[in-house]
Image 1 (cartoon, rainbow, N blue to C red):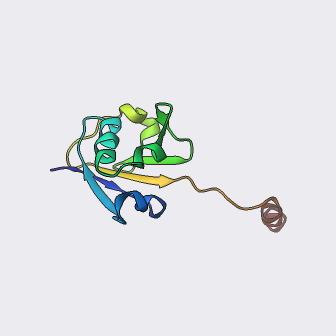
Image 2: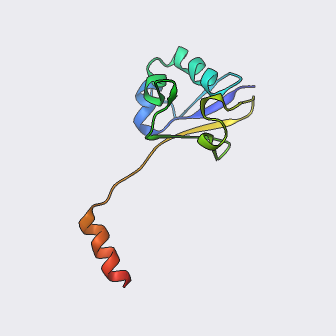
Image 3: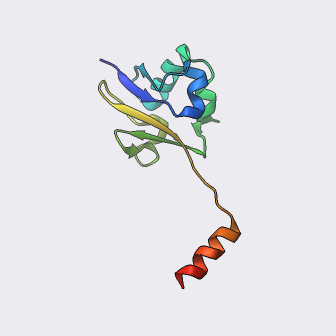
Length: 103
């Protein structure tokens, strides 16, 4: 059995278009290294200076790994790891309109 890693659309160019790939490892860091061995370049999009990139969210079985131990979070066969790019947006003008409507 392996660990399923769900890949967001923006990173699928590194996985030949696959929505999910499998990997092995004892920690999130070793899992990412294993997957990067078959899908070169993926690790560089997730990790910078030994830490998770700021605008990447990774969940282990629906739990944010930043609260579980980051890259040292233990993983096991049967787990599901989901990679999500952080989403931000909107504009001051839009938020101002929303604030005016709310009052």
